[in-house]
Amino acid sequence: MKMKNSVFRYVGLLGLAVALMVLTAGYAAAGGQTEEEDYPARPVTYIIPFNPGGQSDITAQYQKTDLEEALGTGVVIKHMPGAGGAVAWANLVKTEADGYTISGNNIPHIIIQPLVRDNAGYQTEDLIPVYCFQTTPIGLAVLKSSPYKTLDEFIAFAKANPGTITVGGSGTHSGHHLALLQLEYLTGAKFTYIPSTGAAPSVANFLGGHTQALFANSDDLVGHREEIIVLAIGTEKPFPALPGVKTFKDQGVKMTAGIDRGVCVPPGTPDSIIRTLEGAFDQVCRKPSFVAKMEELGFVMQYMKSAEYTRYIANKKKEMEDALRTLGEIQ
Image 1: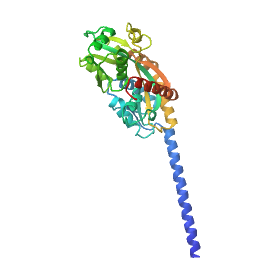
Image 2 (image 1 turned 30 degrees about the horizontal axis):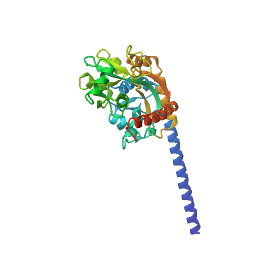
Image 3 (image 1 turned 120 degrees about the horizontal axis):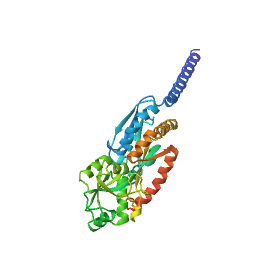
Image 4 (image 1 turned 90 degrees about the horizontal axis):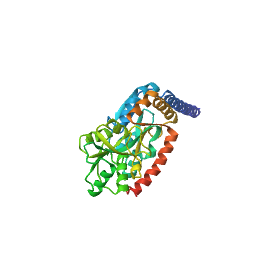
């Protein structure tokens, strides 16, 4: 009798334990579902992989208020410069995939860094694309006091005096660095590249006379056009915001150069959260006042949602791999 009671007690306790486990799992599942449904329920951190004052930062600052309204919560902008953006992206892939940490992403930077570094801390595919909102064509500029008034003069001197001309840009193995490597490969000229941790310090160094030339984004070229000579712009056709400036191709150098910007999230972020962020950025970036300001500054607007942006990056990766092999940067 005692044994039978013991068995009943054991079975009863086991049943209770199983029931508690089921209930706990149910609550956890319900809680996780509710958290996704309630997203965002607290402020979102928006990482900028470069210094304050650069294109990524300027854009985020203009997006911030409208983005807070679209998401219904605060947005905290956090700068994390270093290694051409790799410091920020390596940090992002380690954060919780809950939508509360997002990051700006730049093409070709997010592609090039893992290809050329032994350990960039991330792979391109780890950064889940949410939205691409702009492009900035890259141009080559000198100060108005420069002895080089044309691209031909600039290249001719560099070929006759290899490594003498210093050229500034944002980051190593970035869009600016790639443009310089292309120019060297296509012309046979050799320059000395001086990288900065972002566009803002590279422009400051150039305007201060610390570099003789600069690969810069279109908005910086537009903003400083009274102080500089833009020798060439990396577009297929003349760039309306810089009337009178010839493209590289128009001057016999068969290259284009530009940087795309958007936003990404850590791997494993739920699709529902990606859709929420995608919708918020699409709403903000199509607002007429935002578009007008971006175009006034020299940005070219893009409106690529997650799926299209993902395909775009995959195609760009193939293109970059071929380019880097040709340039001798990777095997």
